[in-house]
Structure formats: structure tokens, C-alpha cells
Length: 312
Image (tube, rainbow, N blue to C red):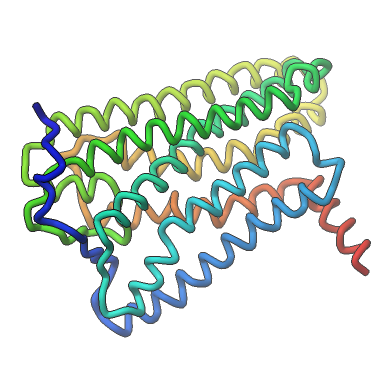
């Protein structure tokens, strides 16, 4: 039986997160850099949520899902950055066993929810372009709410399984996690038992929440591409494709590093490299998503100008 009883974990009550550097000067520089990145990410996504909330003409399924994405991104980066910033200034870089469990659960659940939400957003674009006359009928507010809730339920379900499997392993002394937060595979490698079966189970979860969603997104865009090619005017094609460009960009920013991290063989594991790759989807994609949707989206720009005008 691969899952040991809970008492086998009594040797480890906390973990030490090694982060990126032990040099005091480097840590102070990193604190300033990541504080600015964190604040910019929260403010940028908060801007998107505020614009959608204040402007009734943005109360459509597309912007409803964009609002959910921004809220997810703010929560996602908040699961890791505040504690990482504290560790950059503090002498101690420890996290309790329970704290590690909670951080891993929230990080996994929110990340998996985002994976599934991107599929929902692709479905929204498919309906808008391939069935424009029935868009509001098919994507009713009731269906939108169920799709968003379903994405969250699936994300937390798989996140809970992933976290439970890893945190039920026996940890017998080694407690230094070579990462800036309690990332699942990094913690799992400290277990004092053969984790081959657990790694296989993680691979199954990765296929379900990475490969399957990507396949559905790809299938949606094949149908969208076919619909766009039927449009006779070049201007019409470009205008229609522009409504999908932002979604394609954020999917690429998120899924490229995620696919690299969780769909490759375990033999290629590199702790230092993986920490930097994690930053791409935990920090930089969260930072860039608002820029992608605001700079490439006329509706958001108009909403912003409208709000500024009413304030003035």
C-alpha cells in the first residue's frame, strides 16, 4: 500500500523554502523587484475587474469570464508572492507543515481552475463567431455561472487530490524545499520512500488538466478558423480574428511553461531552472494578462475613458 498512515510524518513539522538566493544584497534587490511585480499584477487585474463592473455594456459572457480570470490571477499570485516577499526580508525561511499543505492546495486548485477556464473562454469565442445570432441565447447567464462554477469545482477537486497524495507521504528529516513556495513536485522529492507510483498519478492528473483542455481549445479554434475563412472580406476576417487574439495570447503565455513543467519526463528535473520557469506562469503571465486585454481591446479602452470622463 503506497499511502502510509499520518503518524509516519511526525519527523517533519516544517519546511525551509530556499528561494533564489541566500545573499543579503541579492535578497533585498529581489524584494524590490518582486514587490513591484506583485503590486503591478494586482493593480492591473483589479483594473480589469473594476472596468467590467462599472460599465454595463461590458456585462456580457466574454467579459464575465475575463473578470473571473482576473480574480483568479490575483488570487493565484497572492498564494505565493506575499510569503516569498516576507522570506526575502526575514532571517527565517520556514513554513509550517499545515501552511505548506494549504499553500500547495490553493496554488494547485487555482492553477487547475485557470486551465479549465481557458477552455470555457475558448467555447465562448466559438459560440460568438460560429453562432453569433444565438450567442446570448446559448450562453445565458445561468449557463455562464454553471461553467464558471464547474471550472472551479474541477480545479479544487483535482488540486485536493494532488495535494492530499503528496502531503500524506512520509517526510523523515530532509525538509529543505528548493523552491520559493511549496510546489508539489519539489516537496514530493523530499519523501523518504519510493514515489514512482505517485509520480505516475501526477502524470495522469497533468494529462487531464493540461492535454485535454489544450485539445479542446485547439478543436474550438479549428472551428473558429473555418468560420473566419468563410468571411469574404479581408477586413471582416481581421476584425473577427482580433476578438480571439487576446485569448490566444494569454493561453500561450500560461500553457507554454505549464506544459514544459508538468508534461516532461521526471528525469529532466532541474531545480534551479524549474524555479524560473514557474515564475513565467505564476507571476509574468498574471502581470501580462491585463496588458494583453487592455492594449488590444477597444471596449476596455472605451470603458476606461468613460470612467475617467465621469470622474472629471
